[in-house]
Structure formats: structure tokens, C-alpha cells
Image 1: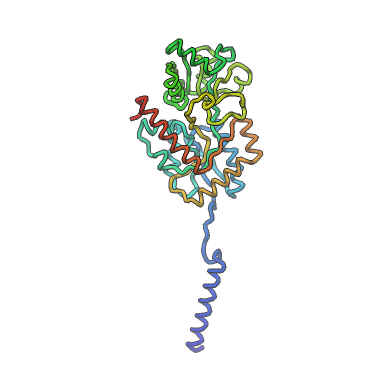
Image 2: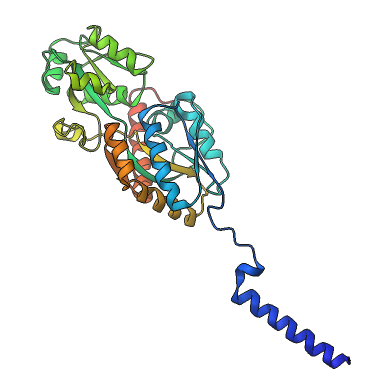
Length: 327
């Protein structure tokens, strides 16, 4: 075989391989299509709560559209900041995402202590799909029939209007103090370690009302009664309960059940996750769980959710500074 023939054969071989590579890129080049393996989902709270159960139900539906399992990992601690820190510190490849919850980890703790993340700069917000059930609750036989009755009593009896929440400087506590400042009254706040404790105190007559999470069974049995639903949207479970804006209170309740990731998450991955979880919240099986948990669908897409977080970060930062609580 002469050199000219060899050169021609080499030329045709290279030309043919080039054609193959460009015409059929999957044959010659490895394509890493996201996702190609299970996704870890960090929940900043202990298992079994309504937000945790809702997330597990949604994960099952989103898996159908992502093609790989979503593994829930609970990382409680620090009022939710431990789990949020883990989300913010994760590699931005879409394989570790989680729930940023809002509330204290995003809008309170960052102004009161040094944290390894900035709520606006270090997280990528994908979707919000609900919020915990928070409300102003009184005993079933309470003389207070409407929220305005609480205000009237507080105005006539300074510091005698006692109420319980699950912690000092919780979102519920801050909202009540914001209302007190707006109405020119004083409430007497009594913090408890968890909602079952303040619910017991309410039934025992040790506080006049509670602000925050509540027991649905007690409400439905008539042992307790809701005066005001702490939410940005009317409750689907309790549609007759007024919400803050019905009374002219222009403050948000930024406690969200949601999906978020680290800040540098590529846009194409954000879109894929947003699409999968958005489609998941429309599935009948998920909607059934939400009804059983008495949770309302409150949907914000990635842009709306991002704007909502930034707006409330400024609002609650200002409130904490006015109250002398920000460091």
C-alpha cells in the first residue's frame, strides 16, 4: 500500500468519525442530563410536622417528572438555621436542595446573630407552594368574638391582655407586637417552648389567646375558636376566618413551605425543578394530603418567591431595628 493510499484512507477515516461525532453526539460525548441520580432534600425541622408531611407528599409527585428519587433529610436545630445553612453551603449542582421555611431563619435570626448565610444573597428560591396554619386562637367559651374585641380589651386593660407563642421574637410574636404598636395598645407576651404548651395554657385559662400554630381537632370540636388567620391568603380549610389584610393590617406572614437551593444553582436546573414541583402540586394525591393537613395552596413561582423574600427581609429588618432587637 503506497503512502498516497494511506493518506486517503486516513483522511476518509477522520472525516467519517467527525461526521459521527457531530451527527450523533451521545455516541462520542458523555451527556450529563440533570438529574442523573437521586436528589437530597433538606428539611430544617423534625419529621412529622405538617410542613414535613406536605414536603414528603410533594416529593413523591415531583419524582415522576424528574425521573429520580427525592430523599428527605431532616436537619433540625437553631430555629431552622442549621438546615438553611446546609442548603446555602451545598454544591450548586441541583443534587442538594431543601426548604428554607422563612420565619426566623430568614427574617429574624440574621438580624440578631451572625449566621453563615445571607437570606437574600446566598439562596436560590425555586417555588413556594403553601404556608403553615397560623392564627389568633381563643377558648371556645371566650367572651372575645372578634379580633377587635381583643384590641378593645387591651386598650382598657394595659398589659393584662396575655397571649402565648412558641418563642420570643418568633414571627407570630413580632406580628402581634407590630399590631400592638399600630393600635396603640400593649400586650403581655408569654413565650412557650412549643405550640402544645401554649395550647394547654390557653385551655387552662393561663393566657387569653395564642398566636401561631394551632390544634385543628380542638378548633373543630369547639374547644377553641379562631379570630384571625395569620396568612397572606384566606384559608381553604377555614374560609370564614378573616386574615390580616381584611382588618387593614399591611404586614405579611412570611412563613413558607417551599423549595430552595444554593445561590449559584444554574438557571436550567432551577427551571427544571420549578416545573417538576409546580406540576406536582396539581396532582390529586398531593392535594388530598394538603386537605388532610388543613394546608392552603399559596403558590409563588421562582421570581415571585425571590421578590417576596427580599421584600420581607427589608420589612422585618426595619421592624426589629425599631424594636431595638437588631444587632
